[in-house]
Image 1 (cartoon, rainbow, N blue to C red):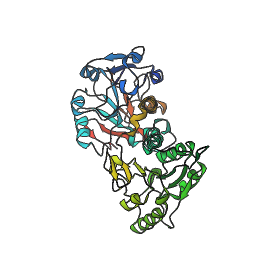
Image 2 (image 1 turned 180 degrees about the vertical axis):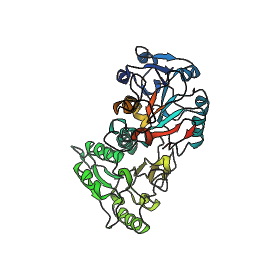
Image 3 (image 1 turned 90 degrees about the vertical axis):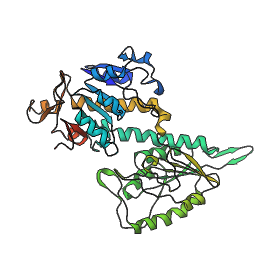
Image 4 (image 1 turned 180 degrees about the horizontal axis):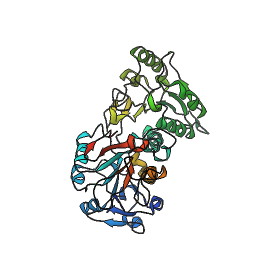
Length: 390
């Protein structure tokens, strides 16, 4: 059975499979599009001992039983997929509904790993956590490069250098890694999150938790934050206005699933920051947490700057690719047994009846168990239809 890896579109440096992860998928033959990994530091030469490097994308796609990608491939690539192909990646179905419909019409079974539930079973496959973790790290590294100041406190013969003060908005995976990285670099770090349960995690990393006096809970489903009331937002704005004048760097990470990013940082807050202050808005792709953010750009706002990168993780594409590939390998091993049957169904003694579904009619098409929770939650196209299937 063949696993195909396509080269990502312009603007994406990562690759969905790396040579060192292929040993976890030794039961499969790997097909890699030429130069697919070059931008991530994986040239064709490092793939050649473990994979067949294919020059023509159409040939690769037509031969692949399973196709893995960071992002949803373009429609021309989708039209090359044979019925029964399994596509695995970060497909963002809510943003790409027309392409998802095309996948369904082509008879492709598509799995979007950004829809994985945050459960213990899914931890090893959780691309959002692995990639967000690196995004938080990279945000601090980029801020250190852009600010033009040394981050830690320094005592020298020429005088004392005060530490940079960093405020992190949103204490999810990206935010917590940003806190940890900024602390390692010697910054004075504080953090804010609408979820009071994150206080303990923030403080365990040595940061100060900024709280808002309210009885309202910010806990949403699946560990995510929820949209807060107007009354809470007013108290939040007032509290942040108290702390912003002391900040050199603000890193925002707040997002709500399937909704635009909440606006948290106002232009008045930005103007109140220390001279030369920098806002790194990691929610730029969803509209940004700062009202001055321009997705994909760094804009000068008086004495301060607001930067809203669209794919900050490109700066650590090598590591990000390795972690993404590991997530994909874990998902494939859970989804399909090496003999091509549904792993979950076989383990339960179900066989290939109603609980197991063929991925189409192509020869050698693998089977998977549509009754399994991870399959059901991530399957966005199957058997000619757009899911949810069940």
